[in-house]
Amino acid sequence: MLTTTNFNINNTSEIGDLLCLLIHSPDAGLGKVVPNKAQDWLFEDIVHLDTIRRKEYDHYVKVLLYFLDPEKIAGKLSAIDSPESNRDFFKPGNAGFHNSTKVIEFQTLLADILAEQTVKEKLVAAICGMENLTYGLQQTLVDTGATELAKTLLSGFLNHKLIFAPIPNFIFSRDVGVAINNYLLISKPAKAARLRESLLVRYIFFNHPLFAAYRNNIIEIPESMEAFLEPIGESHEPTTLECGDVMVVSPNHILIGCSERTSTRGANAAIKLLFEKGVVEKVTIIKIPQKRNFMHLDTVFTQVKRNVWVLLKSLFDEEAVNLNEPISHFGDTMAKDSPQIIQFAKGKTNEPKHFANLEALLDDISRNDLHSAEPTQFIYSGNNQFPYDSREQWTDSCNLLALKEGVVLAYDRNDKTIEAFEQHGFAIVKVADLLKKLESGETSTETITDTVILMPSAELSRARGGFHCMSMPLLRSSIVHLPLVH
Image (cartoon, rainbow, N blue to C red; front, side, top):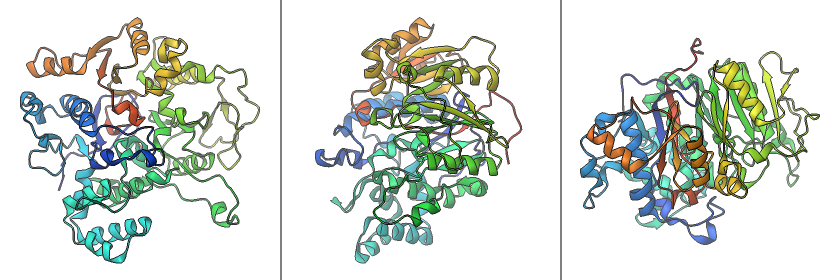
């Protein structure tokens, strides 16, 4: 059972020093995606599992450990990088697994709760109902050991036989939940391919001892009453919210994107709950086009420093931005043909504030929420050059994870965006070179500043998500000091 005596949840920004996060390493199900089901399972293409693991995602785990939990990896780089290595260091459930309490693996937590027989029976029953499995197969799963059962519930395979679909998108752990201060908001997925992920996360958060102190701080989005009352066959807007559309920009302010995956009903429900529970004081709604290439808010922009943001400029350049059709988080809908940005304050929801474009909002956050004394800077996808802006946004040039303020992980394939970072004074380093310097002591994580760490991306980028997607931060150091919400 993964335990830690000093476990805390307090995520108050996108850029404070990253101290603890949840990830899910690519499991066997990712390598079982077949062409005729790829789009149903939210993939553009089939990917090569061994390449994703050995040449790409393993680097991600290594750099996370050096920054968050160096005792787990220091002195071991040569051994775990050896061609003879069987990757036990990276495989949850294996004897040599790193088992970090700072870089926490979802599969480990799942296996832990499945060791409790009552939880196991309830979860297996819920999944068998969801997947329409036979009672006999349900009993077989109940009789399976916790470690193997965790693999089955993730990959869909039992004894080398596919019994239900894999959930290959679980590597994008940001989308299934987000920590807001010391609360945990669980997604309500828009796509059937991700429903099992949300169920697993719900069981983990409510049943694992690691989260026992926070069970009263778990927020679930309920289905709206309208969905039950509308006649069968009539279309209605679903209540959906995926956490790639949620950004924590300060202790009192979050952003929610209304996108392909998050509906206005889902955003409205989240605002209501967050204000009722006193989690934040402000919520800004950003409506983006309901298109695959803008599937979540964090595919359009992410934060680099308190005064530096990377974003797709062209999205809000259209003349058709319409500020005359405001939404209320109590039920009205947005205009469907143009981006909009509307901010609500607790207790003043009938007095929304509008922003003409993304830069105006982000500048306001930098100056007024984060008290930046420096001019706000914008680094644009593809260096704002056609066609590189949209090409590189498609391969997640805007989807970066800050390890600490000014130090971000990015894909190495987005050349023009990397040029833009250089023009703004950032150092560029390849992850393999950085890892060698960290291992040798030539450099340290404490001394690295204003740096883009380039990560190999041939296969991972085809899975349609960057490192912001592949992380669920639970604890960051504070960059704005306000009283903790209880």
